[in-house]
Image 1 (cartoon, rainbow, N blue to C red):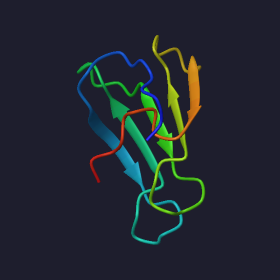
Image 2 (image 1 turned 90 degrees about the vertical axis):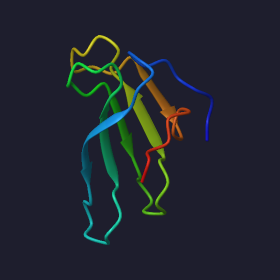
Image 3 (image 1 turned 90 degrees about the horizontal axis):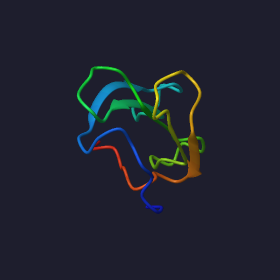
Amino acid sequence: MSEPVETRGDERVDLLTADTNKDGKPELWAADTDGDGKADLFQFDTDNDGKVDVTMVDIDQDGTPETVVDGDGGHPPAA
């Protein structure tokens, strides 16, 4: 786990998880953290070890992330 990054809210609802290489584990997560139904937290497992390697946060939801960090940014996925 890396240092926590700021998100729009304190709740996490995964809107999308994707198994991009068909190994049965997700490699992509898109989450809503403020309850508006729009993703603002995006996470990627780039080395297929089941752990988040890159976290991006789009605070103003304009399609350009304000924050990109190594690790889960203090927001690990539930599964």
